[in-house]
Image (cartoon, rainbow, N blue to C red; front, side, top):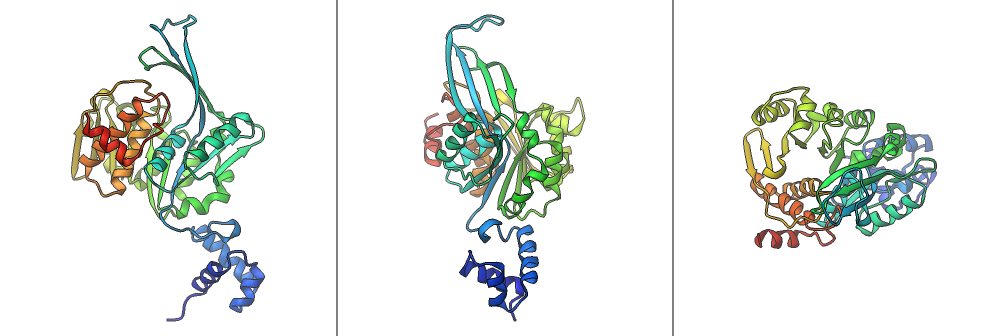
Length: 359
């Protein structure tokens, strides 16, 4: 069977990724206009990743979400509201999407982050931290006017959150129009993770794309979780807590079984129901598994939920059943709770398994 024009075009691009449209046209015996039209279609399909005719290779994982500069203060004694508390301050990289991406990168995945940060000192610092974590930054967009997202957390002497301020207005500027040049990367991804800090408009736009891979989502908060409604029927997995699940369903007084059943009916394949101090409940239509959390020495609870979801996603992609996913996800969360930042710097599959064995 004679190869199609687009198959021949892709072969020609593989041989010479920097060829001009006219050179490709001459090689294939086509007009330049015809080649341009085929390249446009292939880009929309995610078979070409845009500039330089980059072709997707290997397992492509993309996280679309927020990236923050995290400022964390921890009191050295009992926290006193409306007072000055002696303690320590530290700066680290954070943001739900960025945290998930770092955990996945440290677990060995080829992952890129698509996010928007400011063209300011905070953005420069954050971009470098993202790169050093092993995350691809070719989808990291910069805004010349808006400040980089910053999250200020206040923790008590036990590392538990007592209050926070989030200056995250820049994420609302991550619009479909701004993301359009990166559409091919979203479409081509084997795994795409989104989170509800993104605007309702952007999440709805993601739902219209002809995605080729698996789609995962983190509900983030009860206020923002309803933004995910247009994606429910497309989700391989959704991470929620009880209040977030109820907000998505616009329902009250539902027990866990009812929350899970109704979300499955809406089309979600797998649910990750975070139960806080009671652990996690994983659910598919034909199977459910609940596991209590591991005993930890708490340093800081920021990022533990992001580590949980990344760990479950990693175990699922590795072929683990619900019990294996819950065990590994809780191991990632537990290890993260025992570090001072939103991500454990030594998180690997081996370190998590060893940590679990020592519980």
